Image (cartoon, rainbow, N blue to C red; front, side):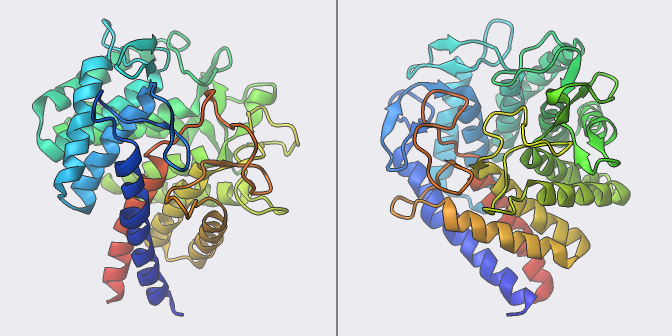
Length: 399
């Protein structure tokens, strides 16, 4: 089978996966029409095991159903879900200081307050995409208010909280620049704001100049405030899925700015981390590795196989191929796609296992940062939407 035919088949497959399996599962099992928002403490068969609501997932759901409407098709039922989630998060999502909370109960009563600035990042992401879908001025204004709130807090390293992650003292986390590079960039585009765009670009360059270490061919999860390496196990943590996801965010930013040399560096970084993460014994992508190659890694569940690095990498490799036409991109994409689809899908129900052990088996107990099974309508459907988008461009050039 030649490459154009493979790409067309892949496009058809991802469309079917998104529209026939993943989104129908969420529409059937996860929308809390009575109390607002979505459920995410759900088993594979759709059983809701807790009605508590994790704000990350609510805000990501706002993004996801808005993105479906914006990017896949103007379906009323998708916009209806986005509006439903928007009403819920606007009612319960922020505290008196304008910061987004972390965890609420079924009705929106706060169980854990503003303990994670990442919640604010996902709020900007969701509100921006929702404003694109609806033209809702309040959504755009709230995203901008959140931007200003975040900027004040980011100016004081160590003074903001980053649940569920603990940042080492006198260090900074890649995840902060990762999320705020992309959400500031997209908000800046929506508002046509040079200030917000520049703020996103500043975070992009923090990643390229401080966290990316070309001499190591790796991107470190934590560095000192000046970008130098920190001593100890935390200073050697590499989370390949984060690095790869971060790089496709940056490719989007650098593409908009027509900075080809930075796109090339980001693609090189994707390759480093695909190679670093691959498990030569059992296949699949390990969650985290040690920069010095030590077996012990200062990251929980580092040796296990989580769904999201695989989904992020499937898109990143197709995007890299679009920019380079280099065969390694498609070879690695095929390898990761095949491993992921041989292990993660729950065919009898339509969604995916979120977490597997190192061997690729469903583990006993729960592998999560929280005490209950969590499904999240984000990494998998977003990757499918993005893969469809890039494959439509690639196949159009083949015709």
